[in-house]
Length: 121
Image (cartoon, rainbow, N blue to C red; front, top):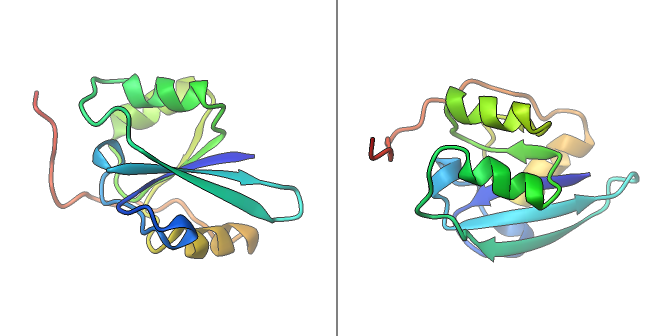
């Protein structure tokens, strides 16, 4: 399974999840094995300035199956669902904490309202 998590810093598995997925400075890509082990690759967000659907399409090209985010809007979720990418909202903590929750089947989708709106339209 390939997982994407928008993060605030490049600290490997200690990178904290970003408040808003589309404006995160980095994306972490996690390759999770069947036994729960995983590897983490953190990259600079190549789409900081993006339009509707750009990030979902980019993550689909990276063969992502699951997006774990803190804040994300309904329109973006619709784009991800059309591409077959499952979205879990309301995540908090670091990549390690999120992956521990996932491995224990404790990661749950939660409604989360972002504190700052970034949209320019």
